[in-house]
Length: 181
Image 1 (tube, rainbow, N blue to C red):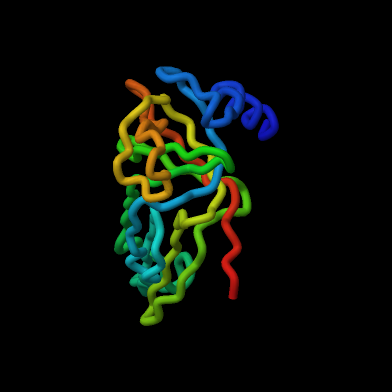
Image 2: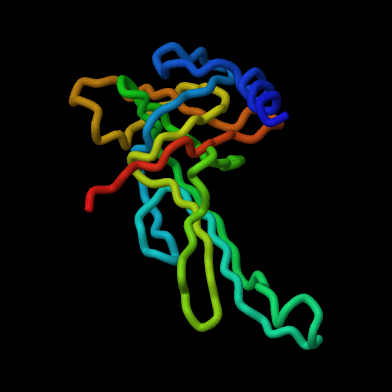
């Protein structure tokens, strides 16, 4: 069943295309590496990223003796944030406009546990510079006056991936970038 679900997802998402081959006005899927335009800091670790989602739980003692162990984990905080960033396919860059985005992850790229102490625990998923992602959205062309990598005479026109009308922009974390150190 899992194999069938993966096949259906790929069929609905459509084939991956290079940024240079994306047709304006069409829903396309681009695979590439994250390049920040701006960065936010993860509230739990302080790491710069373009996306984070976390949850914090606290251990609560059970008031009923002998039922379900001696306690349970209670969700006490959760948050999610995302900023505009680039996806770079090795040849070109496209802007990812995060309004209306749904972020998912591939197997093996789960939320990492974080020890907080004082009977609390947390899990965090971040998307950072260099992470490999796929983005499925509607292709549009915009003027990108903030691109510092563009040459002096380079065009300010840039492909943008945004949420299609009535559907979410889909971002999938495919592989985490291995940091040195």
